[in-house]
Amino acid sequence: MSTTSEMVSANNQGYSYQAMLVASQKVNWRIEDIIGGDKRLDFSKPFMPESLARVGLLDFLSADEKRTLNQIRGNAYLCIFGLIEEFILPFVLDHARQQLQGDDYRVRALLNFAGEEAKHIQLFKRFREEFENGFTTNCAVIGPPEAIAQAVLAHDPLAVALVILHIEWMTQQHYLGSVKNDQELDPQFKSLLKHHWMEEAQHARLDVLMVEALAEGRSQQGVEKAVEEYIEIGGFLDSGLKAQMQFDLEAFERATNRTLNVSEREQFIAVQTQANRWTYLGSGMTHPSFKATLQSLSPEAGKRVEQIAPMFC
Ligand SMILES: [Fe+2]
Ligand SMILES: [Fe+2]
Image (tube, rainbow, N blue to C red; front, side):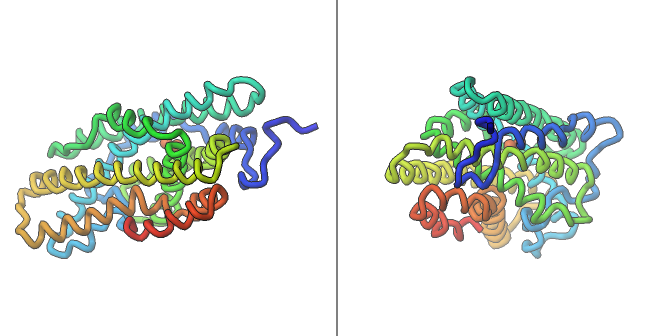
């Protein structure tokens, strides 16, 4: 006889809570193994892959200035992931809290998911400490995380679950699509992205199950309303990214002791706005697995997101 956790619906791409728990236990790592002691950031190397940083397009910058901007974007990545995970953690805990009976593997897999996100929040903070110790200029970041979490969590739970699904697949895209084969990156920063990817691979699949649980029994109209709210949250995050881009510009000018002229500033803003959009929005919205889940919920909603995605690529 099969247990509840082994039963999978037609749409969830064959993922089960039990399999995700087992996979997660196999890859589990400790923060101390990734950063600290002789494991330091190397500021002579870039931190972000060029496909996300897009500093190469700013041809009025010297090689050193490009690396400095790349590292500022790396610090922003640590901060943005830190604050994204601050709303994922309570959301997953609330979701688990509502279904403590019936499937032991579901409870354990979801609590393990929350525990890993708490660890990731701490990991990103540790890397930010390392960054601040080595990068002499102060870099402002958006926040506070609690205010952003509150604004996101005020939405329909299915919309929030879709945002989380988007984020988890986006992390997969970042590592596999641009970090894995990049030999230039600082090894420590690359290790952060790799270890994050290893645990996020299970989260992405658990999110599919969360999305399905939250969509169960909803009318087509109810699903489409949640997808509209997913797009609204995307717009909210997009305005945060624009503010972060301004902070990055100011930090860049301070760090390099250079003031960009009007045309350089315009180019900087245009390129970096789109670079941020691709990093945090486009790369999730266009991920084939995210699109497949959306499509299975509602072909109309799938089309709607597909239409707006090019703006963020
Ligand atoms: Fe994470
Ligand atoms: Fe995650």
